[in-house]
Amino acid sequence: MLDTCQRIAAEKFAPFNRLVDVQEPRLENGVVVLPQCAYDAARAYVDSGMLAASQDYDVGGMQLPYVVELAANAFFAKAGIGLGGGGMLTVGNANLLLAHGTRFPSGRYSVLAGFVEPGESLEEAVERELFEEVGIRVRDIRYFGSQPWPFPHGIMIGFRAQCAAGEITLEDGELAEAGWYNTENLPTVPQKLSIARRLIDAWATEHGIVIDQP
Image (cartoon, rainbow, N blue to C red; front, side, top):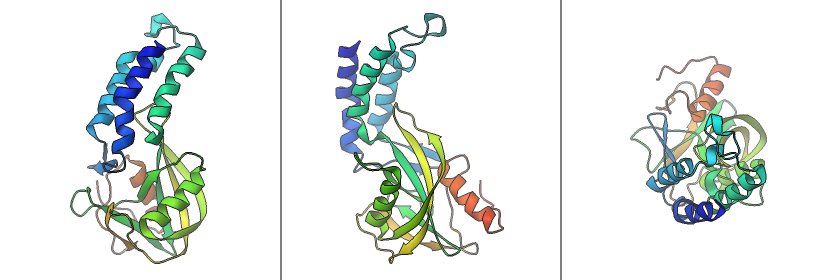
């Protein structure tokens, strides 16, 4: 079992790690779209039986010792270290920071998102990603909520933050445009159910509006 998991991690998960910098996850019609190798990795993981490795036979498990399950999953965690992601909503006064990614559908804007790097906290990841992507420093970073991520040891986590300083500057080529929006000029945003839309809807509710978009 350990040999099989090591092979799957090397063949199916490691490619995602290499591609994530150039093919980042994006939202299309409220659905997260990932590089094809990400779907291949998820399917290989499911087919390996690791979703229920330590569960009883009568519920579809393999009844492996828990320590074996942990050891096997360690291969996937190390091969796919960038599988944890988060979404951030930044508020400057009554304005909302939204961005249009280079791979987004035409006209759609969303909150900023990024990946947690090894050795940093979630709050540090929020600070770093916002500064790297748009040149904005933030404060008062607060946890908002989470959303399942289709891989082991990964989850999408949403945060809210206040703008502390900086002017919007697009740094790394991942974003085509970014700007501050208010209740009068909101662009098209992600569809409901995504954590990005939940962040935006929560902000809208606080400012007394309902976003009339699907």
